[in-house]
Image (tube, rainbow, N blue to C red; front, side, top):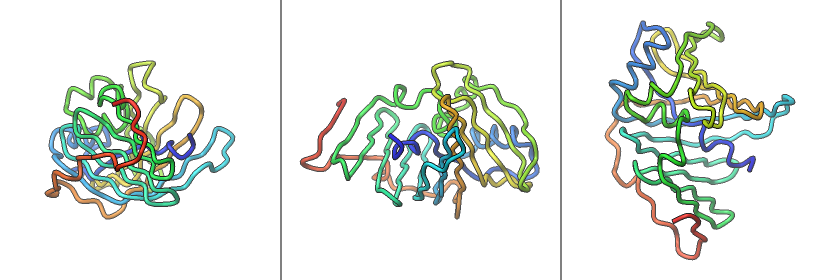
Length: 204
């Protein structure tokens, strides 16, 4: 399960300059059509012990399409086409398939890859300024969201540089984004997935 902690922490992007963090988030929801970046991620347990470090790349195409690919230390892939989500673990030779709304619900991934209506599922507020960033905080209105809150850290000129998620078990996930591209042209194939021959497919 630890290796899957990354799956629903994902996706964050550069935003418009000279806006508050909440305004920047709203502007992203309104104006960003696509995004890609590299990421690094650290997961801390409730005790403060480091449980996982990973890195990889992500791509986002609104509405609802995304690709989250972990390259190190273990290869894993999550692909959403707007209707279904495929979670592929090459080492286990297993693919889990779920409906998009069941897989994401009110998660950070759904918040950033969805439309303006998705904002209604979160309470948004301005956070403290630290580490040279301004922070917006989003708390899911649903008690079944699976996490307590998510914070998004922006530079003064509106670039999203960090994302923190606090889940209901006291775990703290931190994401850092590198080489972001806002509204690039993305291949349709990034958001398609066919299970490799011979793997176990669960849920389809």
